[in-house]
Image (cartoon, rainbow, N blue to C red; front, side):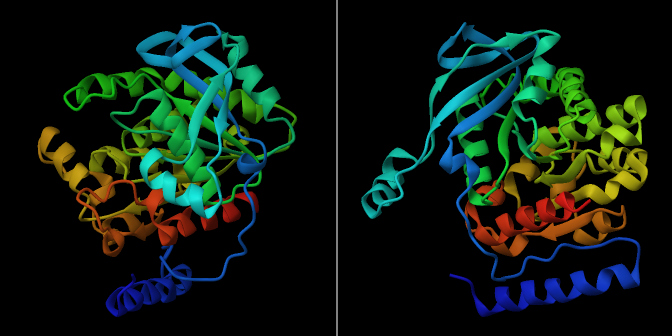
Length: 338
């Protein structure tokens, strides 16, 4: 339950969000309660998740677990049919034990130069919400998070996942980081194929934790190689709990120039997972745990979710907290309007 102190906190954030554009060049996305019309997500109607991946498939068509932790041969594309949660009261009770979304099956895989084009064709005429997962994720856990995200914000377009070869193990942080960076070229090919397709839609990116490093680096590469026309097809870029050295983050944002205004950072100074990764990385604060003022000075939108954490780690609030999901929803709405 929201406390009075917390209510005062996000009401003051909402006020500041309205004043910020008049006061400075940076803006803030406040966490505030508001009435937003809830509709059924497109994924709930047709539970098909578009999957772009640099993981090695397990068979073709893939069999469970569908994609492993090994690196594949560049980019692959497929469609995963998801099992939607039971919306009945009995289903909601059982979901506490058994989980909600699940991966039912995965179709044929297109690998190589044709994969990016196949993704663009599958999204033709629709806006796309693509989720980029973080450290220590299996294909299945990442797919479920992508479904929960899209359904949670009631996204009306196509839902997609970009999944890279995470070892899904606590002590393989180094392998995960290198695998994420190794996947930059494939992610760039995917975004470029979408940007140059005549579909007319926009692609919105929500990246989490280590996936934000992959996303920021890829956007830098895309802008440098394909120019502003390619980046113009990208709507919202939400970086949730970015596991990036704050200095590296600042450099990346600076290189994006005016495109940095597309970025919304969801931060929390009490994110315990980022405290741990910061310690592993030599003690430099991670962008997702930095003070709001420090992030705002870079010209990005900031939603400080420090008051909304109720767990041990407070690292995935964009999936579990309705107010934080509201930040994602508003970012997408802004991005859809250019």
